[in-house]
Length: 603
Image 1 (tube, rainbow, N blue to C red):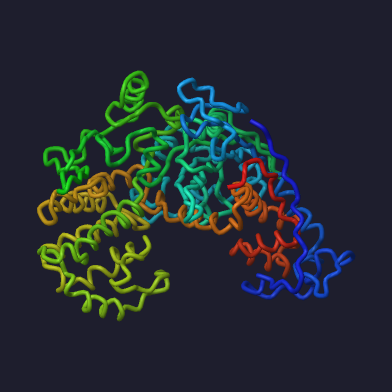
Image 2 (image 1 turned 120 degrees about the vertical axis):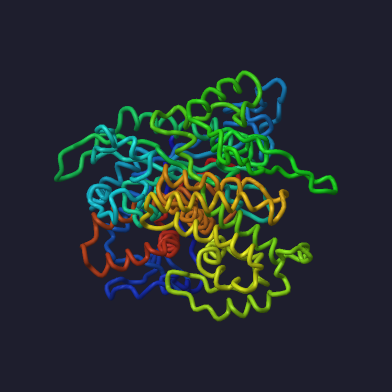
């Protein structure tokens, strides 16, 4: 493991004017001048126009240096052979005698970068108001004491609080993990797999902000991550944080020790299987919550899909447990897959983390892009037009109803008609499920199918509420069980896939981790989209991303140190931070981006 020394990348001179991206945000304060990058040596007829002086030269210098120095970057390059995933280090030929691949050829090795968590945490504690914000769990006002209103009310959090547990300490923190693959280019198989952690003790609107997320690392390559290598440095840090903690010194405050515990995680099903070292969702025993194996369903023309028939005697059991999964992993490590477990995973070695109950069901992928998308396909696709549930002939009437809807400001997308349904985003499926679907389909969808859909709509609405009573949990669970029980009767056993089956476990996910929005992938997907927008070329992609992440985390602290609170300069920079792409381009052309030195081959 070697550290990378960040370096300054000087921007190239441009002939002709540069149109500042700052105009998209707001006008700069009057004393914020636009000047040339190098006015002394500039020989162009029209100087470059970028932000230079005098927002305070001290602030810009700090933004350059602190963003690079406060966040350490460790690289793991040329570590794994892409053919057999063996550890290869600096060898020119794979040491695996059964492989012996030429490691000098293009794409012969895989790369991942670690951004150590401890320096990020220490930097977060230095931010003004951070220590006060993590006391939110103690200061919040609940609607009802017994209701579930955040992750703090879930069983996985509470078990670390009761009996003077570690999370009863006002200085200790807990984390939720997430990862997912993001393809970079349409013409390439290369993808990035960022690993995020959010700090649960922050208020929800604060914990999901970019600058408050912990960015643990990024996998880059033309294959899925080799998690046994990728997660090892992260696991070692998490183990240290869990057992030893870190000493925090804040000016004006007594020093204290902070222990950090991983208690939750969420991801889509393919990523979850990779992280937990289990079979994929379409394999035998592919459910992460129970030991039901499912069965193969022949769809005709040689096609096969994996389904989970409704088990009337024990719909959601037998349930998996953390200890049983560890036992299965030990057996699988010396034989074959056991109950869908391929072997141990790094997170299972953390004392605070329950790999079954702590891994939530993501309703974005499972409910919105899973069950809701399946239902709309069954209702509107031409191949189902002869089925009793098809309402394809009613599409004009449905489009008319959708067009008459005037959404409230909470809904950011106006409803698109059914002809665009293949382009619908997860948020559009969510909106249709929770708000538009029932009134639009009333008197159009046959009654028994309408009543069935209403079960899903209302139960999901309950599990997304800000405050959920124990009685509402029972009500939602009953409705979801009825929905799954009737599904095969209405639509056929062919469509009883893992997403439909997981509805049986959805309420337990709320009992363990809080309302569905606390462990949803919606805010993580937003960050993935943000990362992709930071890529402005085909070279040193992880370096571009890491540099930007370091900057976005450092900006609030640097502003706090160098700008006068309430000044026009601070207000302007904070507005820029809301759309970080503007300030990232500003830094890039102001020659203070602090790009990390290239350590991987060009893509």
